[in-house]
Image 1 (tube, protein in one colour):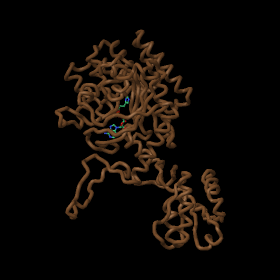
Image 2: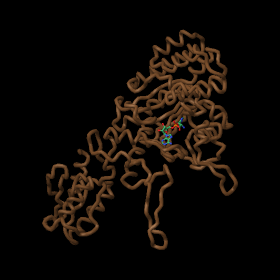
Image 3: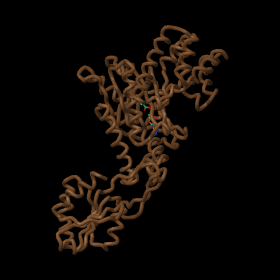
Length: 467
Ligand code: HAM
């Protein structure tokens, strides 16, 4: 596999865009032209190899954190998302009535589904419940850079842990899922906020629950819309006084623990004070893990989804050029709302589209993820039979081996070997066959070595393990 900063880059949209026009022969043999549905993607092998590479590292990272993988249906009862996911997602559902008259929807997210899985078996599941999945989702969204109508997410969630230990573990996992590709604190950061703190603060300022929710919706849209974000609130509850709005905007701009402490001290109250100690503990934990460099206090994030109850967080690229890479938070009421016993929960999801864009921008997207280890360059028919024995034995030992299916000129074979991305070429010519050896060429520096056939396996293994 080849990757790394400064390495070969692939076209910016190689992994994301749907093929706008495809051609196919229909059953009568004439050419028919089809299009993918807008926002849907096809994955040719080179693109799929890159997607698999991303999934492989996410999966590996989740395993290093002790998370177990699960899967679930792609089609769900529509009811699962109604009111639970929030207005925005509800408006974006791909939903229809099936042949049995059921109202169904393609899943737009995993969170309600994983709550059902866990809620159903909560009594028998070993705690802590640390689960992850990699799956495809569907949202009928306006298409833009990094946003499609079908996309993949890596979801990770912890159930049954009410304390900040769960947030610690998940924010650490989120950071590591990005760092394992070579991204650093110069490439991304995680904005950390808290819906509880917002609730306590706005309550202390005299707002009831409905008004608090109205303000949070405005805060969620403030970055995009500016002052217009408060229009819907004003229509429903009347305009906020200048003093109140000033206090809300000041809170929204809090960007450090010190600023948070000062603002909260000015308002007072036990709930706010207790919540600040959760903040200190969480930030202390993350600092001890060496993750402070990724995490920024930012009360401007409140998350649009309806079910979040406490700490919320979103990951963004540092340059601010792309949409959110990931988002998540605590949702202690959702399992209960689905009809199961209450169970605290925290989780997040990373989307594949913005993430792949960021890797490509930083030159961290591998270009040759499915390169063979070795490529056999073969003379004639007699040499081919000798090569076959070695090729099959090497493959059976787990080496990736390729060779030309038909007899072609040596020059063309060497070209194919170089283009394949293999590290070694095994050369089976008439001379080698006569001497009972295989010539091994290091394709990086073109150095060559002849080894007796019996030593081929050990030599290839040693070379590849030191490479
Ligand atoms: P979300 O913020 O809706 O959260 O999505 C998480 C990530 O999925 C986004 O940051 C983005 O990278 C990606 N994403 C969302 N919509 C699209 C789209 N239309 N096209 C491409 N990528 C997209 C959730 O989905 C929560 N269920 C996450 C969660 C898990 N919360 C708790 N556990």
